[in-house]
Image (cartoon, rainbow, N blue to C red; front, top):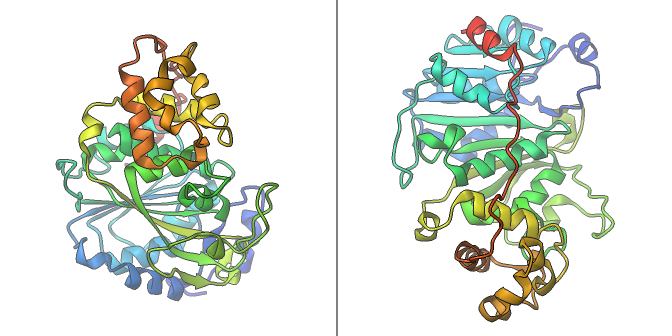
Length: 359
C-alpha cells in the first residue's frame, strides 16, 4: 500500500489490531467522500475552523473529513496504541494540521485539559447560534459507545464539554443498537431515556447505515434498522458491511443541538435528568405508577396537576409532556433535597501528563 491510498488498509495491520476492542470503523474512502458531499458541510465550515476527532481508529473517515474540509486544526484523540501509531506515523501522518494525542476521550475532563493547554481554541458564541468554529466527530462503536453517546447528548442540556462554546454539531458513528435507542419515537416500546433526551435537546438525522443492522430484542421483532425508524427526515446513504473494519453494523448520526427554549431557563439540568432517569426505571408502566419513583408521596401530589397524563406509559410521553412534568417537579415542595450523589474524578494520574506530552 502507498501512503494515502484511499480506503486501503493492509491485512497485516488488521491482524495486529485483533478483535478484543470490537471497534467497527468505516474503511471505504470513496463512500466516506459520498457521505461528506451529501452532508454539504462546506456550506457551514470553511478552512478557519477546528475539528475534534474522537477515536479515529483506522483513520479513513478522519482522512476523508480532513481532505474535504481542510480544518486549521484537527485534534485526534486515540487511546489504543496501534490506532494511535497508525494515525500519527502511518496512514495520516501527512495531514499537516493534525494533532494526534494518545489519551482516552471517554474521560470527560480530558476536554477541559485540552482546552487549558491550547489543543483547540474555538470561539464562544451564544447558544442561539450554531458555532461554526468547531466541529466534532467520533466513532462510538465500542461496548461503552452507547454510554458515551448519551453523555454527549446530555452535555447539550448542561451546556458543558464542547457545548459550552455554543451549539456544536456532532457527527457520530455508532452501533445500530445505540442509534435506534437515540432516535426511537414515543410509539416504540423500547424507547428509553436517551431518545427522550434527544427529542428535548437535539435534532438528529440518520445520515448513513450499513446493511447488517438486525435487532435481537425480546420486545421487538428482528428487522432492519432502516425499516424500524419511522419518518426519517432524509433517506440515509446505505453501504455494505464490507466497507467496515470488523464487518459490523454501523450508523452515522448527525446531531445538531436545538436552540434554547424558554422552559430551559426555568428548569435546571439536574432536575431534568433526575426526572428522566427515575421515570425510565419503569418505561412501560403508566405514569400514575412511575411518578412514584420521583419521591415519597409523588403519586398523590401530582395527580391533580398531571392526572391527564397518568394513563400514558413513560415511553409514550412526548417532549412537551416531559417539560410539563419538569415544571411541576420544580415547584414540588417535597422533592428530594439531594438529587444525585457526587461522582468521583474520572481522571487518573497519567491523563494530565499525556495531554501535555502530546501537544
